[in-house]
Length: 468
Image 1 (cartoon, rainbow, N blue to C red):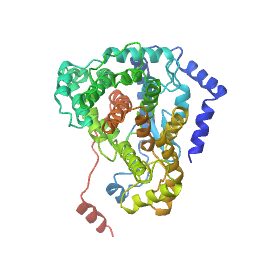
Image 2: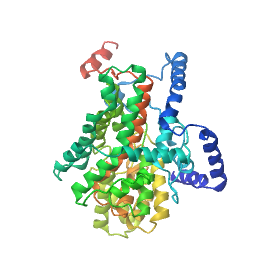
Image 3: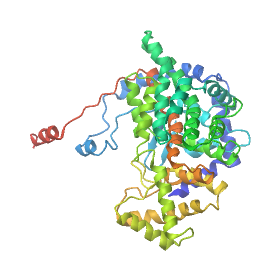
């Protein structure tokens, strides 16, 4: 199942396709203003008219029936949200504003000498639906660098946290505290008109993304004892600065990995816990700092953002048990022993996907290029050839294929970032891109307060018993 994605990725890197993609990028943005905010201001009236038309044409149409099992089953598959940045197809995977991961890798601007897309370009795409020019991405990098400093009191909050406090708790604490300087909160208190909500929301969202590397870097160094935090370099891109703050700025392989990592973890539709939490809290007109602080607390859960470290723990336990160069039979037996012990195979299966996660494929392509002889990477590949058949035989998964978490921890550990408790913080830096983009559009389009209907078990029983 991973082969089609690999083929598409290779095809997207061919000179002919790259040339075609370059033409699309040039024609779509060459005449547009450099400023992301200026371009957004141009797009908002167009989008408002589109939403008005769609609601007029289709507002009374039904997606289909809602069944009781969906209410008890975590609302799986229940169409209930508008999320513009990405759509997840069960058999195709994620598309960012209509573009696949291989297309984004080919289309989005790169750093000089780099081959992976810059997250700045991905954020521009999520906000505007357009591929930015190199100049637009460079200006965005500079803007974020200029906004990157965090208030002194936030630094003090982090410095006073005990190193035993989980990095995600510290991360969400600092993000929430940024509310102190929220442009939206001030503008709302001053009586800003509703149609102008998007402006200060945009400013807060830009500040949020810009300040996350400094927060993440301070958490990392405080918890893991890595010394004084270096300054942000305005001449470098976002990922390079984050890598430097973590102590890996001189490792170009790690910098490239962060560019890919942030891009593919940035958004995954609106129904996952962190994205939906951010949108829900934002619908109460909580500013982006409060909304994303709440989102981070959802991301910190073991069924969401902690999954990648569980994969790495499982892989290392397997290595310790059966050895580094174990046979396929030994690996297969270990997988069966995991299932017989009442546990799941971490990194396999997904609530929506029914194929190999394209984010897994993108990371595998990266590993084949940069670390083909890494022992853990080889084990990940070996497991990929074994686990799906075992899960199908065991009847344990509708989707027996690997997801993004099956690979990311192996890549980070290869470059020396071995502190697994910190991995979810990097996920949190990345997911801010998608949540922030949607918060901006929610305020621009006047999205209302979310208020779905709930029922008790007794009420459901009575409702349908009376209809029999």
